[in-house]
Image (cartoon, rainbow, N blue to C red; front, top):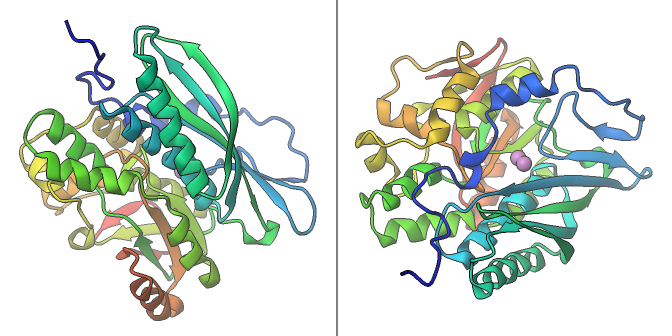
Amino acid sequence: METTARLAGLEAGGGCAAKYAAGRLEELLAGFAPAAPENLLVGLSPADDAAVYRLDDERALIFTTDFFPPMVDDPALFGAVAAVNALNDVFAMGGKPLLALSIAAFPEELPIGDVRAVFDAASAKVTEAGAVLAGGHTIRDDEPKYGLAVIGMAHPEGIWRKSTAQAGDALYLTKPLGTGLVLTGVRKRVLREEELQSAAALMTDLNDRAADALRPFEPNAVTDVTGFGLVGHAHEMAQRSGVRIVLEGAALPALPGALTVARRGLRTGGDLRNREFVAGAAALDGLPSELDVLAFDPQTAGGLLVSLPAAKTAVFEAAFSSGGLFLARIGSVEAGTGVGFA
Ligand code: CO
Ligand code: CO
């Protein structure tokens, strides 16, 4: 008998792949519009990475929550990834996290040391993000789940939305793609420990430094790439901004091992849901199949997707390069609708 319950089990449905299908979410929220006071700068119409509430001329509160089942068996890694994923929605809005609460569900038979490891690792990431883990709520559940509710702060004029991309912008991504594929590959023993380590490093990397480097450039639109995959989040940005996004297939950056897994024909459960979400709005003709799979792969704690005026690209790229920060120019924004590939 195993003394330690396997945290992630054998399903490939953990992490952001556990997100409710984007299409079902749209259906659920259609017509659901509670009366919004004028101080609600970002609510549900349109929804964004977090809600934003204006306190006064200088300060706006950013409020978000994210939680999901484990995508890895190591409790400390799970806790760190879940915390980073939740904190990153504050960075995706242009803000800085202040305060976090745990949202936790664990089976009673899970050793207390494992649960403690989840909380310790999450707390360390909250501290690294400049915030405080001040409490939370834990319930019993057969399937473990962990995440945070996070409050952050930003200047009301400095909020980054996903609904304000402009034709003529250049499109950037601040982390490579493929966490869903790599985790699936490790679980199916197609990949080794090295590839898991590079995916783990990506998923535990806060988007704070990328956001700090981006802030002076006043981007037109920003979101982070998570469970809906690159195409799903690009589709949201295109639709809400009333523009067309053209991705350059050859420019899509991949984690080590991700394309190997894609070529083997392995997929996560989120892949199909993400395709259904954008059905009809994304034309992928001519894209090599492994890049197509990469573009739909659900990401856990992925990078920022940035829409920046084209005139700023040279200085922007130089700033990321001199800061030693990852940056890939992956496409452009045009007049029109939908997501296409060049
Ligand atoms: Co987000
Ligand atoms: Co979120």
